[in-house]
Picture: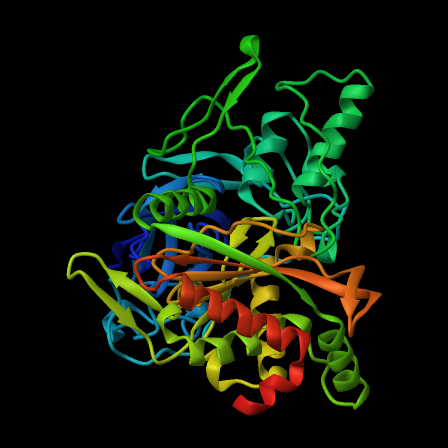
Length: 479
């Protein structure tokens, strides 16, 4: 006789207490193997595929796509001990034990068997969306659901590819069929800008709207895009998390700070509240640094990014001024200095601001740094950064020049002690070798925790960085 086991949303680590269902990877009635991913969820830090520790037949799913669940809430139920004979070789019962390839808080110790992944295929942009499917809530079958919308029939397997559940909600709230859109993102991915463009077009054509039209948002062309506002939400709650309320009569739309935006808001507020920060800045002539990069890339081999050269300068400067590669233990009233440099870098994505971390940046050369920046940037763009790749930084490099601005006063990435900001590099009049010339000039700014050092140390660090930017040969002394 089959035994029905309930699999709950596990502890995803890093203090995360909730997650939002982005995409179901299995249907009710599917056979799953131990450790097979059954759902993709979005936390405040990353997109995560959640593997199930049981093998058997899925008998129920809890929650639609877009629903936010707390840790410990039921995800699915699995009947173990019985399955169709044709699938007997594709999944193992709980009697055989579980696998160690699991997330925090559940699972056993046996190595995983061959997986039979039940993954839905991504449709061609503009094609019809997934077929309807019943979501069992434990109280009988629920309505047919396609892309988080009840009662919408479909003809193909798999959901419409959308950048975020918030974008899906925005479309659903305004009665927009995502199957009629062609996404401007990679592989036809539908972005928020695509949905808003369609809503504005419908408004101009006289189509009825259920919410106020949104201001135009430029289409994203890279990971360094402008921050996207959070989508308006329906007033009827679908989970235990707070939901936004719209007051159309007063021209107000209220959206809870949750998910990645909430995590960023909490961290920035904590930094301002706890860290007595100060900022110093200097203009530097980056002409020679740009020439050095051009010469490196002309010599053959993998191309070297400007960010990698700035990171190499940062690590060399931190070796000279290690006070800035530290944190403050407020309870012990101690400054904790790190021997390693785990370098965070700010990246703007369609999901919001993220700060991936390059581990042991001090031990990497420019080529290795370039490759790691590219890998982490792509993971940030696709929403696949892991919590481990977003935590543990000891110093942050913020290249806000990609937004076309010269200067800024960065907020320290708590609990770090400093952040170097880099503005755009642009031609400006500059006195070079006693004569006025047009040079490539950049503004550098350093925000630091005044508890770990005084202005002399911070100024020395920033001056050394500027010297390396102006005369890259200075770096040869530390190579």
